[in-house]
Image 1 (tube, rainbow, N blue to C red):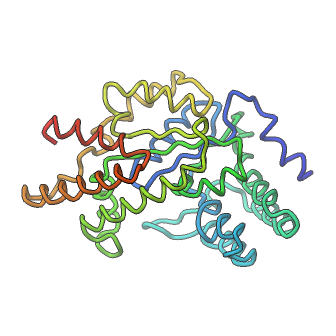
Image 2 (cartoon, rainbow, N blue to C red):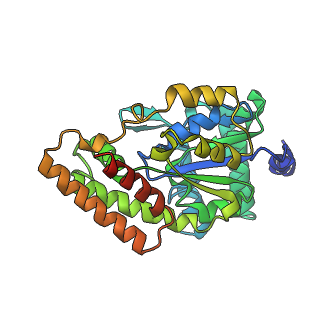
Length: 313
């Protein structure tokens, strides 16, 4: 395949559909359900796994900054990112990228990187991920690695045509979900540590998001999206991707997305009244710090906190 032609192809696609939509957040914030919502539209192809090679420190960010060698990058690409064990199952590119295509893309990258590092990274991304969109007749892709927002300074250089959707969720729920996921084996092990983890991640996301222009960035609250007034947020999400909410999107939104399905206010489960007050006080203090420091998504989080307090939650 002519690398130059392949490199230009995404720009030749229909301009109203965003060629690359990155959906990111802290983790346990609703990024995957929002990505699946977008993927119900026939013009966008959902990449079924978190690809990670473009956002992890040993991926594009470290590689282009000189902190990671090409050799180390390729070793991890052919290893964990291709097929790695995580959270009780095997994950990685092997689930949807044929091995022959993978090796061809990696070989082309290996040959091109030393002379043109950024074009080589961009080409590798498209060589690995876009063929599925072509097969589905889609005009763009949705990539759902959580760190796409925090690593936006790298991604906007490589993909200036991309849009970013930053999904946030009540920090009490997101952190409780993370603590449950770790099962007390690794940090964060406690609810207090969970809120520490969440605050740090929110600050990383905020720092990364500042590299994205307002026209290419949407910050949306999962909690508010799932309220009765969430249809406005639905339209904004679709608009950021350059599409409208068609029948399949609205059906998925109506039938699969609700506060119950999202396990809203899960943080309360298993806590005594005293511990609930403690966690709530810790979270209120986190919100105040985020607001004081001008974190852009703090007003969204405050709106959810206020609404739930008024409802007695």
